Image 1: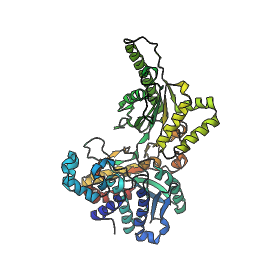
Image 2: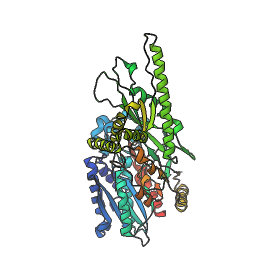
Image 3: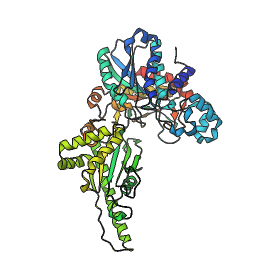
Image 4: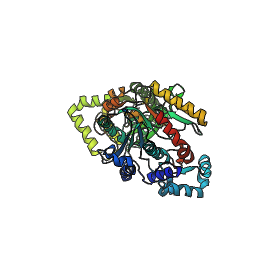
Length: 533
């Protein structure tokens, strides 16, 4: 057997990590083929070649499916993982070693005092391996490949379908394009998907959290944007205009770490919003003030509807507009101490993207606006969907600048639905699993309803998909370069769980995996959980 011991699993993990599969890179494309050929070494797939497939996506990337069908029953457990990773600029002078975990860990031993205290302690223990992707989430993929091999070797009376996808870190295009393939596989092989198990690593609920978690759902994500359209003027006459950087700063003060926007369900609480993009849109230096700016926020949610979130964000935009108006009036009054002048009153309006687009169409016509929006998207095809969304809002706002100054609320991709398992039989099975390992091995898992790290379970689990009625109107590129296959998502809804290895610091240069626990203690735990399902 290839992937059953700690050493074998570590070697597999290292080989996966050495493919520096940053999302949208060439290595991301190549790693899919590597995973396929690794699985193809197993005798089962030599004997059943139609059960292992490399699926080509529209953009040239691929995802892998590997079906082990050894039961007369139709019930099948889906094992899902992603093999892309985030970039490595945060590694600084160690960047060239980020995808060489053995060498990186050895080099860190020579620079141990540069590490934060907890990472230093872990390094010195000898139980941890450092590197980009070792935690998030190539260890989970290695464990699922190992589980597949174990099920084949021991002839489990179960059906398992491994699904390994790219692009989870950006837009989840791998998972979204895999949905039709899952439907096709179910039809061809007469499968009934009983549950899906992801093996993302356990996430800390707070700094220093060393608890183990079994998740029965996945958190949702919104990316609200606030486009600020001010009024241009020369820097020598600042009071004759309105600087968009002032406008966006008022939004930032009201949104960043706003605990009123935390959602609580039972004992679980979402983290407060934080800004992911904030910038003015001036492209060159000049003595004209920036009159357009934008900010995007990461907002996580559990049960709250999109319409409720829209109401909250509009309320914040209106408060920001009020603050801007009062600020400008107050500063103008102060400036009157130096000279007498006619004050230009500032009255910031607030619109949703849907509303401002309707106004633009009323002025310029539906056909003209559709053509302009398409032209903006095509001419900015080299940009990602967030930047394209900003460009479209900017174009629409510029055609309605007589309505300004204004704040426009819109949403940018991606959108992740929140999903949770409500199947009593499987939840009971999960709780029995937790109790068993606590009693028999003193390994204690805490049941958590929502995995907080964001994952592809959002598109395969059971959730509220009513957002499909609002997203097309407020994501500017919806239907062009971004959309969600809600029909396929609703057709495939299944119970979902996340049970994965232990690591620390995802998306940081100190990302690391507890190899001792993850590759010695954890494999039989994961196997037991899947078999019991």
